[in-house]
Image 1 (cartoon, one colour):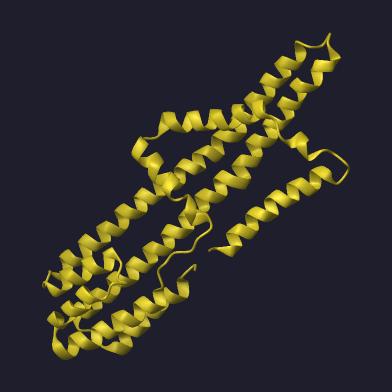
Image 2: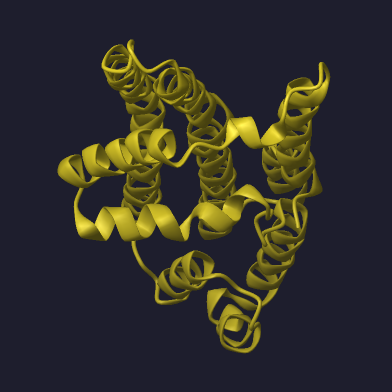
Length: 252
């Protein structure tokens, strides 16, 4: 559980509610179904027009990342790579086959790279294939982050549309003051929803997804560098120095 992300969400909600009630205003005044439908429905509709079903499903599957941390450890991975390096220098690359089969904690990327290394794959091909995996996965994750970023762009504009619709509605009730307030409420609350959803929800989600996949990409890059070092028969001290740079740059 990413407690920092959860804390941020609690601070956002509590700050808005406190500000609304500070001067005696009703918290219920912040809730307006027509304004919500205009802003959220309009934003969702715009996203459905621009994206594919597969990408939308993938973007939705990334939502738990807001409150969780990656289940990957650069420090533990570095120790494994150093152990594999020592073992391969002493007993050859085939000695790592047992490690690849029995270590259930290995992620799919590491298992793939280690299998290619054990099979005697050309070092250039090993680097190209694994780097391609990193690039393609990062691109896929970035498209999902851009989906939420697009929602952050559409939401304020649709909020303004909701405000205009509310004012049009209000103008129709100039001769009925008791109904005038409802239209004005939709106008102002739609603007709040548009700006609030964008800056408090959609854009932070996009940036959190980027933070997550950048960490995963760093993890994979470190693994790739480690496997190439093993293939070259690099000594343990030099390998440790290579890997420590990645650990220091980790965002988690």
